[in-house]
Every structure is written in C-alpha cells, then in structure tokens.
Image 1 (cartoon, rainbow, N blue to C red):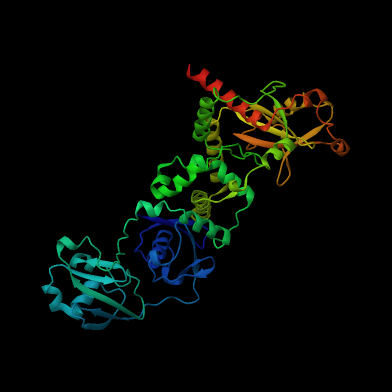
Image 2: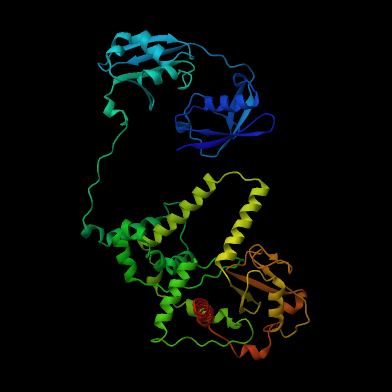
Length: 477
C-alpha cells in the first residue's frame, strides 16, 4: 500500500511524493529535487528540525504517513565513497569486496560468487527485509537504491524455488494461540481483573464518576454491535445482567452530541413498546415549540440516589474507554495538514451532513435560578428565533439579555443560524441579563405562572421522543 509524504522545498513550494515501504529517504529526496531542479547531493531532509538518515528505508524510519519533510541545503556537498559488501552463502561461508554505490546488485554477485549464482535456478539477494529476486531485478537494483551509501553491508544469497518466491524468507511467525474454552471466558475474574487495572491508574488516565455515568448510559447501545460479541462473549453476559437506561447527556457547551441517530431511533422504539405497560411521565407544555420547563435541582436529587453497583466498571466499559482513546490518538497523529480553505471546506461538509441527518434540534436554556426551558427548532433558524422564544416566558420581556455557552464563556451572535453555532442536534445554552443586578434576583427571570407548571427531566425527554415518533409516523404515511 502506497503512502505519501510532503517535501517542503527551499523555495517555499511543497512537493507530494508517493512512497513505498521499501523506498529509501534518499530516493524521496532525489524525486523531489528532480522535479524542481535542485541538486540532491547538496541538500538533506529534516523532520521536526532534526536530520533524518537518508540510508533508511521508509518503513524503518519511524516517519508517519502524510508527514512533512523539510529539504535544506547542507554545508558541504555529499560525496559517495566505496562500501564493503559481504555476501553470506547458504553453506555459511562469506565473500566480500569493495564496490561503488552506483554498482548493481548483479555486478556484486558476479564479482563475488559468479560460479555459484549461475548454478542457482532463482537466485535471491536478501538485504535487511528487502528481497531482490532474479537476475533481471538484480540488474535494475543498485546499492544506492537499497540505502547502501557508505561503510559496510551484509547480504544473503539463497536459491528459492519458483513456487516459493511469494513467501518471504525471513519473517517470524508467532505460535498459534489455542482458543479458550467458553467456561474460562465466562468466569467473573476477567471482569474483576479489568476493573482492578483501571482502578490502579496504570493506563495513564483517571475514570471519574461522571465518565462512568456516561459509559453506563451508552453501554446498552454498544452491546448491540456484532464486533463486541465476537471479541468477548463473557463481557456481553455481564453487561446483560446490569441494564442501564439510556439518557440524554446534556453538556455545558453548544453542539454536545447526544447519541447517534440510529441509537436514538432504537431507544425510541423500545420506549414505544414499553408505553402501554408503563405510565408515561407527566408533561406540561407551556408554550409553542413543545416548550417545557423543569428544575435542575429536582433532577440532581433524583440522580444522586444511584446505587453503588451503578459505578462498578465492567469489561465493556473499559473497552469503550480504550476505543475512544485510540480514536483520539489516531486522529491527532494521522491527521493531514490542511490549509484554511480546506478546513473551511471540511466544516461546510460537516454542516451539510448534519443538515441532511437532523431535521430538528433540541435547545435548552438554563437560567441563573437553575430552571431549564426546552424547545424544538429547525437547524436553519437563526438564534434570534430562540431569543424571541425565551422572551415570551420572561417576567421582564423588555430587558436585554444574552445567550452564551460555557466553557469558555462565549456570547452567541443573534444573526447566525443554529447550524453555524454548532447547536445541532442539541445544545445547552445559558441565560444572563445585560444588566448584572437583575441576575441576582431569585426566580426573577421567569413568570410565576410558568413555575407552577413544571415538568420533570424525564418528562422533558419524553416530550422530545413523542414529538419525533409523531413526526416519523406522519412522514412514513
């Protein structure tokens, strides 16, 4: 599989070079120099202001894919000197001689072991992990292309049958791991050992109670994937014994994603099936856009009554933590460098994808008195529509106010759409009066008649689910 590196030239231009794993860094330098008329013998390559060895193959250089190499002039011209090449034969004997780097591998073989090579049906030269197979390929390959520019080099000359040419000569094959019995996989000690490893902090991160809550709420959705079932059947058995109800996880900032769309649809269908047997929570709609009002203090008192078993870690919880850490690490290391235009293009693509996926967005506005007002909007609506919606419930509608997100505090402009403000599919916004003294009045923001029509947090969730189910049934019909 071909990879690519970017060479930053002395004239400020960038040259993309497609590289193969067995390609040397000197070949990358020569390719970039040839396309722009530079002398490769008077330049070197640097990565993060450190010189890299031009004799290394790309696979052994430790350079990541899509990396940027800087080509800079050297103080003195790089000259090629003769190298001592030693060839080890199949019987263990060795032949060595001195050759110039521009000599071909076939020339070296003829000089050191001509008689033996002629008797071979298919001679193969092995250097490092590179194989030069047959006379034709040896005539095209030079010592320089293998990264042999100075010093000494050791090669092996062997004879391989034509049917064995596809198999590599010096690759270590690990022993096969015997499959474990199902009884061993289902033992609870696996879960206990995984929990102990996480509690010890040896993984380089700490699991807080908020993280455990978030993991528990998303665990049932993760158990439905086929990959998790194949990895560990015992983990699925443990997870089934500890079901947890999926909830919205409202963040303090804008655009905090709840769940993927398919997961939410599955949860809505489960709730729809449970509705006949279970009484739905009371929902008090107090205005347009399915407006409901609830108190965070009452919701927190309910959440604090969780049993201790809720915070016990399972194997599935740790798998999700490691998966997220790997995704974050791989995204930071392998992410290509983008110009401002490309970044803007990627942002526009992400916005179009959200607009196509989400037809509505749920906006919650938290007041200083810890009351939360919830409404449903369209992604293309400006923030001014949200402000007009909030103004209908204020005790002083004429007072100026701001809507902002935290952390850090950012006052949102009224003329931008909810999609541009990253409030799709949902967001938690905060309310504050422009006049600071009005924010200190207890329950002074909202009209008193609405405070008598509060809905629970479960009721606010149920209102959104009911709205989406009703809209989906109308669309399907």
